[in-house]
Length: 412
Ligand SMILES: Cc1ncc(COP(=O)(O)O)c(C=O)c1O
Image (cartoon, rainbow, N blue to C red; front, side, top):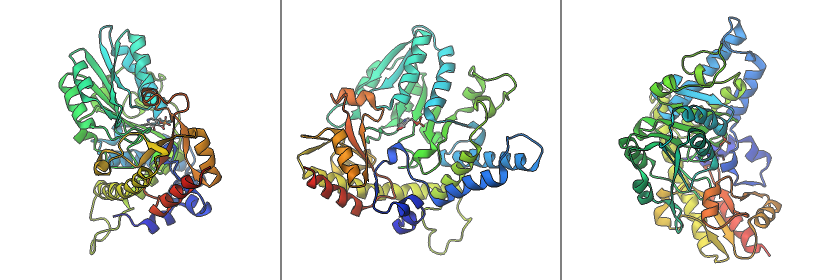
């Protein structure tokens, strides 16, 4: 279970702005002290380019290797060399999509969803366009914003070469059954790309159990710095055509890591994973070092899932009693395991932008618009205004939700 006081005390932003309620996690979470310290330590003591023979460069290499191993542990990747870093998920996905456009052929089909963030849609639309491939859309059930698996199955065929799906919706919070989609897509012969950006701070990820071919996430959404992450299956990373400069290495992971990386950010990435690994208390009588980091991560993420369901329940129940607001997606508190605590609403008599500005005046930080979940916003008929998104993570509290509900009640 999560020790809330111990968690909150590690986040300087939560102390510095103790009157603020941070519900902006889906656009970037706050960072614990150890992430800040690791970043400052890198710049103070190790700042150098990598691959040199002198002390700071050797130290830089070690820090970069640590970051690869930390993410391999977080995702259960078979090798740290299959972990690629870059500026952010969007840039890495566009980077990969250029390569995919080289291997798709006219007549091939690419599948995307009406639920995903556009960073897991547009790169594949453009790759399909460049290759002359056909795009197929996986639809949603509008009443609860879950993926329509019938629409997926009806369109899946031996022509399907690429399937891109998110683990969880950054717009409405739905957790998708990506294990089933991956299994069926792979059986049909497709390659599967999963977007775990929104899901990563909320639950455990295991690329081997999922059976996917690629999975992307972003450290700034799981308590780390602004660094993008792409895991890929070794055979694919080694054999796909890759856009790179000639002198850069042809082996993994260097083949896909274009240019000089954000080394201080990578120091922070490793620290963010270490934060998560140590965020749940050791069982009584167990000393440090008994469990692997992967096991400790699994324990923390299970604790986070359990705690966040309490937050979702509290917020959904509060909103259910207030007909002025409509919750998008899953509202049923018996289905909390099908959603993360990202709760988006519309209001009968106020735009999302007015709601966000009003809440900001009460020091409650939310987002208005479509949060780049363009397709679902359009499908629900909410464009151009979108919705108001309240994104909770494990450092948020029930008391904060009570304050949010009170503020909503007081809105003129
Ligand atoms: C689900 C999802 N996918 C992709 C992205 C894009 O991530 P990045 O900002 O790292 O490019 C986001 C960002 O909000 C997201 O929520």
